[in-house]
Image 1: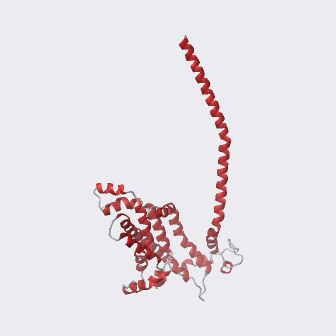
Image 2: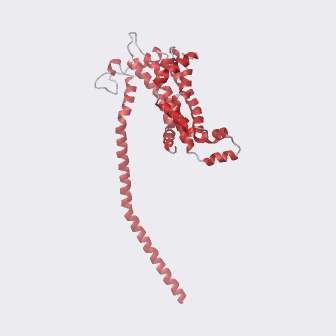
Length: 317
């Protein structure tokens, strides 16, 4: 009887304790309810304000592009109207219709895509190999050689263009696309790509290479099967930079090219002129708007890897 009474007493105490804990939890959750609601509201207001601020800050960057697209459908005299307007007062297709007739714009467009693609692929291979060598292979004077290489970025392109021009002329490569492909891959423009790949490969753990050696891989096999496949962010960063630089290249095509059918799109844009030698502005603006398309496509597909690749360049030196 005593044991039963004791058991009943303990059960009653446990029930009272459980009920009090539940009451306390309900009271605490009820107190937290308004606070969590206010916190969510503050977070929503902060996001709205932040997005509104970003929209305002983006106007100076977006407005010229929007103006350029709509100006292709304006008469030539309306382009210079003050104050400038975005939408045309009088819509016309006169300028757009001349894009492919005044100059061989389609051929020049393909030339730029062809050169930019080959430069991008070649630069990724060369820069990745050089960056891996500086990062993972120990050889004499590696640091000093890399320092000299980095110092080459401070030399202006206008200084080196004369010896490069003489070298190209002696090899008989004038008025061809080869100088526009070889020089960006092996010239000073490749130094930034080498630096990005070096910094990325420095961040890879050494255990990966040791595992590759245990599997019987040599240095080239480790690079091809382990290091390079993991270098997606660095590849994206170098690809975007090289594609943009090569596609927008103007100075080098002006020096090395003479035939109009070999022109790149940047050089071809300067040839939109009327019979009196005056620029056809609405046609020129329309053609310029078309040149932005491949750049936007490349950046939209690789922007996340591009940012990640640049952020990794400062992880380890």
